[in-house]
Length: 237
Image 1 (cartoon, one colour):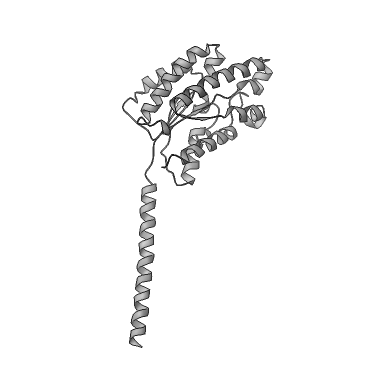
Image 2: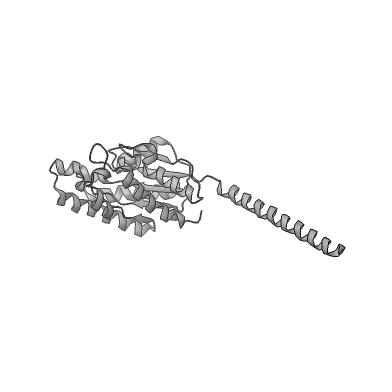
């Protein structure tokens, strides 16, 4: 009988130790997961989120979605201003003085204002390539941690329709810019997300734009964020 009680006591101790051990492992995993990764978002009005609250910008929504998946990023560092072209973004990066700093994730969305101002695609190609090379540098030289988003077609928005914009022309030029952008990404081995097709379907809806009838609402940015999250999950953080 004494041996039976001893065996039972031993099993109880082992069970308790196993429980404690599992809890410790869980805590260790939580501690590892709690390390906050860094994110640099480069762009224009689509990145700074013209007309929406900070929390509704696509970089912020992406960070929140990733946290729900136990991938923890600190608040994104955003270098973007409404109206910026590629050369103006390059100047903005220079002013931000981030040379020497690196980030776990870098996104780049730029070009709509180049198209809007009627600049040639050839000029865009040259300046975009330089920006992308810089983005890779900021990602510690790891091209696999850089993601480029396509240019949305603003020609479908209520703003464009109300002002009588030539939608076919805008569409054609946006396609030319995106083709140039995608080709460079493929050459450099950088991930490219097409958000243009989705925007052409939903960009004209009242709930898809802010009060200026031009810039995307948080609803649209949510879709962009979800696409970005899908790529980030594959990065192995």
